[in-house]
Image (cartoon, rainbow, N blue to C red; front, side, top):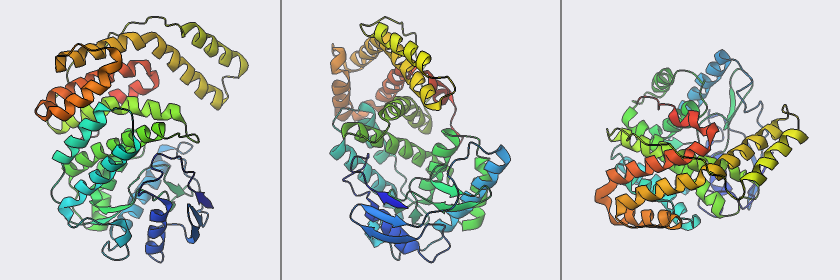
Length: 393
């Protein structure tokens, strides 16, 4: 299997390269970590053994999914038991366990500053919040996969055959990887077993203590990584990527990240008026005609047509609700900052306000959450994920 860097991915041109991934394949060769063999490498490409099996789980019944995820937890535990002090210097490991979270944030904040051009009040706010609330201890530094969850491992229907996609690998707190499983696996995908039982399984296999408070912190870091990755992809081409998915994920993060931060701090999210009213825009009729055309030209059973149809309907809804959403969000930021704003100025002004007024973080988080919740009303497919409670940690 030839893995090639297309050059237009979310983190292209950063430290998260295929070369970084190759370092791990070489360091883990000969261990009991389930990883494909690296056969050869060159600039921007890796030639690797083709791992057996498939990544999808949705064709399996729940019992088999749970069996495979239990085995995945075992595979992850085996990785975390590897001695991180030897063979991983190229990953620039943190000086001590207490600085592990800060180093993760330094990496992704650097990607945000270098790769994202559009203003993002949420990214600005989350960057400061996560650095301020970073854990100061970790019992042990381990090799973290950095992108844990279904889709990034292969299985043969019974057990995991290989863990894949190692470009986010780093030396850090093992609670980081467990947080990826909590969010990317249980919250976003679901039906992959009992997380508490999986934590007990991981603890028994590694001999390390589970710290749910740190998992809750790193769960927000995972959302931050998703947000920055999506923003960076949109601002740097993403020609080979599904830009609609990135836009939807940003809408999702705009709601659940502020909620997660408030819940972590013991603050209840505010009640929000989401009574956004539809108004036909100049494009509504054209978009409605496009929706009708899609339904006429492609059978409903075609997965591609179904996806395009959902996106077209979502675009139509946004064109109708957009004016109301923008006005209400503008009014919320105006009330917070004490400035009279045009809709086009909201993100820039809010971004600057967050930088200048750290003492107002609780108020900023509430407005971020409310604005995100109004915006996501245009994305009906996201509403079930938005309202889904987080796993208690």
